[in-house]
Image 1 (cartoon, helix red, strand yellow):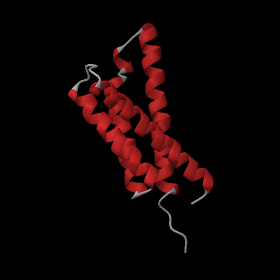
Image 2 (cartoon, helix red, strand yellow):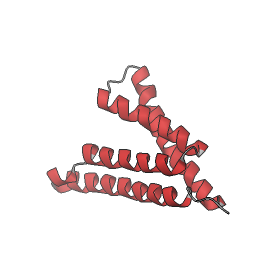
Image 3 (tube, rainbow, N blue to C red):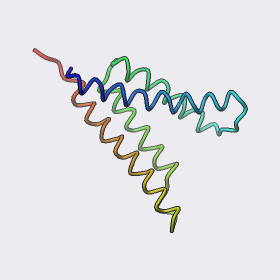
Image 4 (spheres, one colour):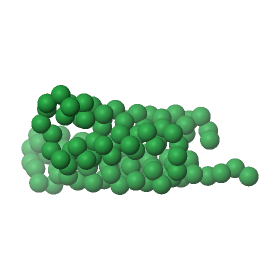
Amino acid sequence: MKIEVRIAQWLLAALFFLTGALRLWQALHGIAISDTTLLMSTAQVVLGVLLASGWQLRIVALCAAVLLLIDAALAHPFWKLSGANLTASLLAFLKHMGLVAGLLLLSTAGGARRR
């Protein structure tokens, strides 16, 4: 695998692992977190570890993309908002879509085998 693809893989893995781990750490220290957030955070940690390891990279990257799509729709429903809230939510949603695009590219670049 090319070094730039490997770096992208590790950066995406770090994003998943660290955001999920941070929320789980907060929950362990008494910050109220919904069950859905706990579930999503646990999935993020697991996906981060799997992405970093490269295990079944194509499938894991696609699963991570689906998780981000779900998270974006649940956490950033810009279509229901107006004004400054609309702008902030739309920006966050679009950032998620950029990450989804990166994961889709990783799923194609990381799964090829050389002959």
